[in-house]
Length: 222
Image (cartoon, rainbow, N blue to C red; front, side, top):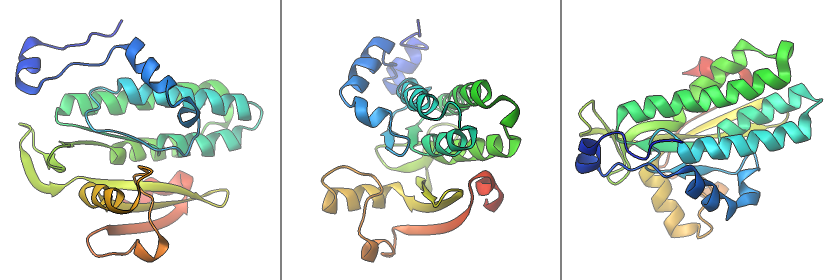
């Protein structure tokens, strides 16, 4: 059973208490259909070491295994899509590092188990890169990145949207979290973090960077 606190000091200083597995699964069951869609995005603003995100990933990968058990290439690309759909922020750097490693371990275990000799280290490197972009050490209240001591820096939290284009291409688009939340609140009542109209997507201060490449090469563009 996962511990709900790491230390009394962290509870006192940061209010850090981890959600128990039973509560995690009960809450995810409320949105069960979304938890198995590879492209359905989730943001955990106080992700800790990944209790919610890891449970969602396990559900997504289980569904992909069911769908693509005999189609390894299809499983691989949609498994990359699934890891790209999960976002987290935590103010504690050790939590961020643990969450990143936990998500990769879950993803790689399932990938290796199903695809075996068809596995690609390029794909693994791409997944590590995506996780590094999606799980951020920052302050979800101020929407800024933090330093080693947990203090705000001048660098805003930036997230990448990962979207499949065709059968093998993946598009990365970078946006500041503050602008995403502002835009969502003003124009997207459905809560989709990246949803916006095409004629609005290049508004100054929202869109930062975009490129499209093979899904195994997303990490080669920095």
